[in-house]
Image (cartoon, rainbow, N blue to C red):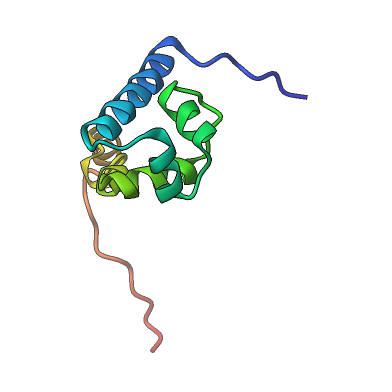
Length: 108
């Protein structure tokens, strides 16, 4: 049985900020929590949980809400591997120093 580790403080802060940003985005669009829930196909309680930074809300619910708010492309770019500077740097470090031609067998 594995023990669930607590969410690190920076991650908790990021999730809380996401909830606050979702609330602000909804209010800027003059949407109530109920109307956003109806348009998103989720319950009003789910919207409240998202906006409060509840980490148990599904990615599907988040995607539905972002779609209604017109912000789904931001989710698509969240962890764009083409912009993963650390990953690209690690891959470059693993590149061979030299590239040699392949040995060909004499049989054809």
